[in-house]
Image 1 (cartoon, one colour):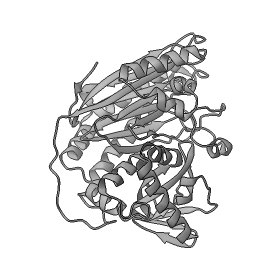
Image 2: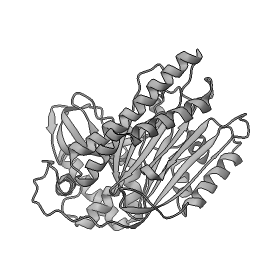
Image 3: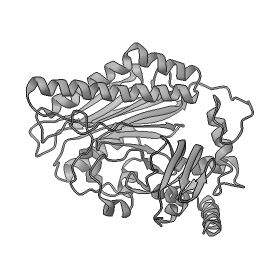
Image 4: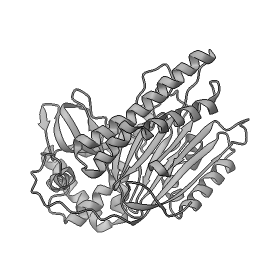
Length: 405
């Protein structure tokens, strides 16, 4: 498929996908959902160590799709498209989580009926307006490939391995047990994200059998360049060439030309005070962040291509490591206590992470926070892509760290 027009999405999209059985596998326990009529795409990897992995992955995707196609979810998505307030965006998040929870409940029922254990990973991507909404359970991955950086949006839900995190972002992994999966007896963890999309961006959803054979993050970046069909073919070839020890499945979404022009809102906004015009508020906020002060708006936008917006509720800790690398955070709204210091927008948390230094202090959310998560590797990719901008960013970062310490 190529150049599809999707409902409620502002861009034309080139869609490619593949799923192959590994050379040493008796059957393919991966499944895909390609639902352009809903602007919904998903991958699931049924767990081979349990029973009926292919049934688990198919059932989870079918239940999730059914929930997203139902009236409550469709009303929430339509309301967001008509007016993209923070409240309506959170309702879309809630519907995506609900889809995962419904799949989890259905698999639990099926296990009881079959008297056997079943489980699967689940990654969904919903396109709306100029955004990709992502919900993630397990160790599949979703990448956002931009001209300046390749961002791993998701964190593998595996037992913690601090040594591998400190080594920086990497697709190579030592075997570790899954701590969250659809149908597993452990508590379900469904992570949700939203990212801005622009022409030329590529969203990749992949099972571990597709991304793991690529090796390190640089190899993932290299593999995800080029036309969508070429990306799919290259990843599948690599998986089979490296022994085909696992099934490999992926979906590639290339964002093409814009079809819908949205009116620019000119309502004045105050930094750090998100309202129904949150996107413009956020731009004002980040321009006051220490590493962006004095940069042009276009340079700030270029630098922000390394950032992923997340929400963290009060009482939780901002993790120093996410998606396999050290992270810094720019606060868009809410409050975070770092040691004895309380930071609000446009505060910068764990700035030293961007130069590979781990600070041994906790950052506890004291008031629900929206923030931009920036991984060290992604920040470096942006700087390498544009050395002049990179120099300006690292100069500001050095000055901020000197003043802070």
